[in-house]
Length: 100
Image (cartoon, rainbow, N blue to C red; front, side, top):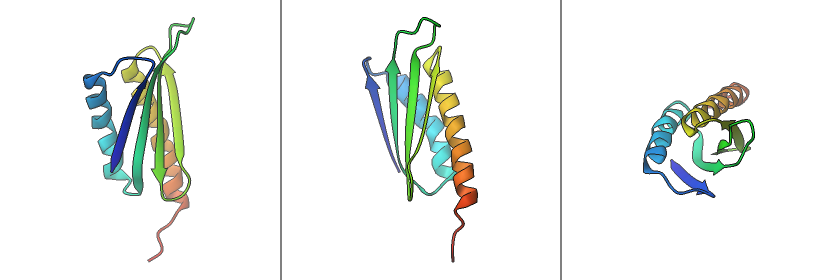
């Protein structure tokens, strides 16, 4: 299990990093095929008031999965991105059946 968190065009935040790791630990417990996660936090100027972007790339045995969300705050962006990843992982898990 490897989690790589990068802050692009912004300062690092220990609390944001801890929050993200806490949320991602659940994915590792449920889906044992996950090898590594790369998390990117970005800050963009958005006229709609959004601009807090969270992107997560999941390395699995097989194709990589990717999800991103653009929200008003980073906590909501992380929550929505992980929710999108869970949907993709459920679909992937139903397609790939273990052969014993």
